Image (cartoon, rainbow, N blue to C red; front, side, top):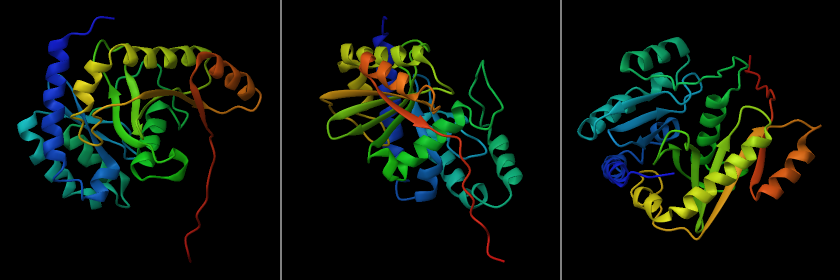
Length: 248
């Protein structure tokens, strides 16, 4: 794979601009829980992890980013309010677009939902995410075939999470390949990650790549063994329903 160093430089510039703006909003817990920034070569994308608008984004030029975040921050009570249709109307009005997906399934837990849920859990420091800091979503420095779903960092280790809608052996090989790609191009990745707004990464000593896919009892052991062979970690998510009854 060939990296365009000019493209990497422009992403790094926008990452730095995003970092400078984001620090003014880092105290806003509602905003930080429900939105994050994704620098690209041409702009900065504001990404939603709201449950009714998972991973929807709006592209903003660096000089307009602060104004957009102020507008969103002023409506977080509505966005998190009881009327989901009203909340979604704001997202549509502001131009938040769905991420393109060729194989979208309406099973209630497609990749975008899982990814948004996962990112929120990391940001909220939920125990199951092992205190790994959220760094980036959909990190791309080369072509779109190498899109890192979620990047995290903890104690000198860079974490790469590859989200899969279902069980797949190919996903394990893909995840291992991503780790090697970063290892072989560490300098270029650090050029961008050191400026990232949510958790800047100045250096890392290790890379841990983890595939995240749906759990099934009859295939879990086989997948775990194959993950060990590929040299990657494996986390499962389960479709479950938790009930909280309102007081009457």
